[in-house]
Image (cartoon, rainbow, N blue to C red):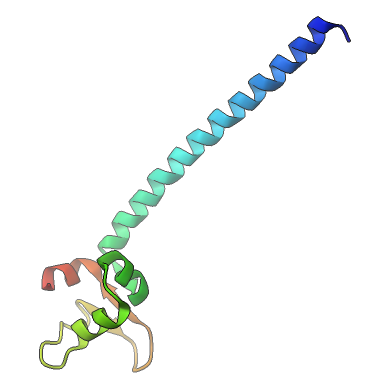
Length: 100
């Protein structure tokens, strides 16, 4: 191989990698957009207690105490739900925020 063909080959390789990087950056941007959409949906739907705690910024036990407080219980089925005692608790974030 002469110097010119070696240089041409190297430039083609760099160009291919640059195109690959651009393609990957576009895919990342698309995925980030989809994650934002999913986070928006999650903010208005039923989520597990641990995920609700992260979103709200309180501990799981604090949220559990707030929603199940016998003196001022939040509406079961609207703000929180639990299939049976000991089962996972789910929080409707939109309704939780309204009730707060």
